[in-house]
Length: 114
Length: 112
Image (cartoon, rainbow over all chains, first blue to last red; front, side, top):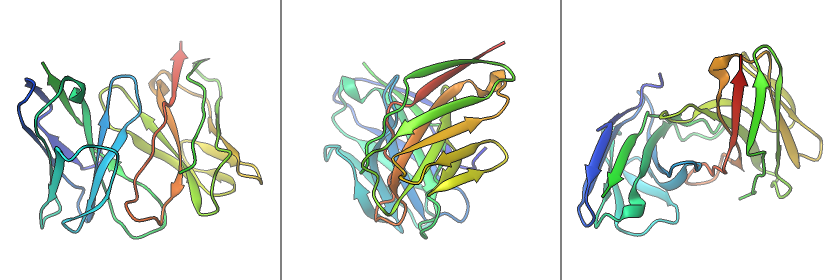
C-alpha cells in the first residue's frame, strides 16, 4: 500500500448534484494531484496542488475545483454533475523536488452519476 | 508532451518473459520514460523510470535505445498476479505541475 487514502470508496449521485471527494497524502509529501479515469481508459490529469496552491490544471471545466489543506490533505469538488462524470477518481501524492517523477496513488473513489 | 503508442493488449503464460514496446517519436531532451502498472479497481503503481540505455530494478527492466524514440518494458518470468494494465508515460519531471499523461495502456493477461 502507498499510504494514500481516499474517501468515500463508492458514491452514487444524480445529475446536477455536487460532490466532494477526499484524499490524505502520504506522509512527507507536499503535492497532490487528481485524476479522472473513465472505464477502459487511462487516467486523465485534472489538477495539482502544491503547498495549498493550484500548480497546474488539465482540460477540465471550472466546475471541477479543489483544495489542499495545511496538512497536505486535499478535496476534489465537482458541481453540477453530469452523466459523463461517472468515473474512478484517483488522488496521487508526491514530493515536488525534481528528479524521479514518482507519484503514489490512492485506491480511488468510484463515482456513479445517474 | 510526447505522445506514446503501445499495443492495446498482450497475452502470455506463467514463467514467460513479457516485453512491451512503447513508441514516443517526439520525446524531448528533458523527458523521462516512466512505466506504471494498474490492477482493476486500484490506482496505478510506479514500476520503473529511465532516461537512456538500460535500467533494472527488482521487478522489471527498461531498455531505451540511443535515439530514445521507443522503449521496452521487460517483465521476467511473469506470474498470474502480473495480469494488469501497463502504462508508458513520457514527460519532463522538472516541469511545473508534474502531471502524468497516461495513454490507453497495454492490457497484459497472464494465463496458467
